[in-house]
Image (tube, rainbow, N blue to C red):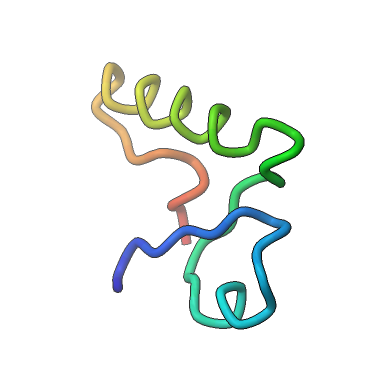
Length: 52
């Protein structure tokens, strides 16, 4: 999957196959990622966590 994303505290199996990572779920990693998606969309950019 080109844009697979895992939280930092995902299982080892998930972390091995995910191309990108965001912060841990306990640290609001998913919420932060969604805010970044919204910010990037408004700016016509890719979210920072998807940058290679």
